[in-house]
Length: 208
Image 1 (tube, one colour):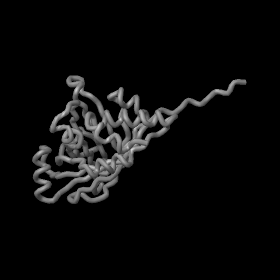
Image 2 (tube, one colour):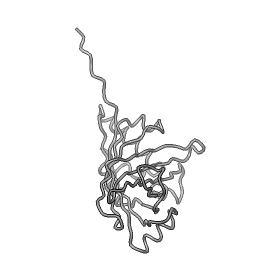
Image 3 (cartoon, helix red, strand yellow):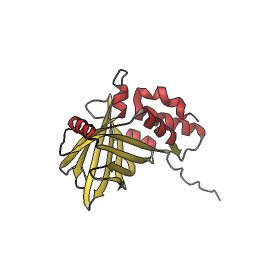
Image 4 (cartoon, one colour):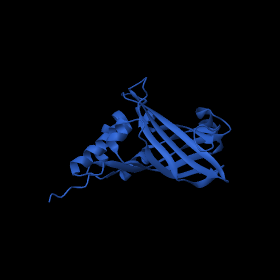
């Protein structure tokens, strides 16, 4: 009798990421929200635990999101606000294949009201002075309700600093890799997609 092998789970990846920046209620302009928030000392931070169950499908299919959960710190609303539901996605807009959008979305509650924090990074596949800014800048708006269809109640710009990027890389883990080679390929695939040309400068920090 031939023993049937169980199908191997797809290779995935998980990591933790923290971003913070100036944020202001009552505006939908991210630059103005960032400026006013910094001036008033109102800094919004998100602490995210992100998981991608099938990395190959995630990279190939713009409709395949990763999962995101974590907490939100923002003094005007509260600290450690739990966000148990969220979306993480990376995709290239159809009209510009050299640009990738990174989408971060977190749902949370404050005083019994639903809020939805939605941000995106715009990463261009080229070298230049904007490379670091593209990879580490999250343009963010806060919506009332449970998704991006609700009215915008605040805006700002969150950033991933060098120290936070180092911490992110230290948390990077591959799941269900069959071999060390599969693990290394998964890290390289994600790093190049997540950081673009910047990945070459940091890949050695997560080498196994």
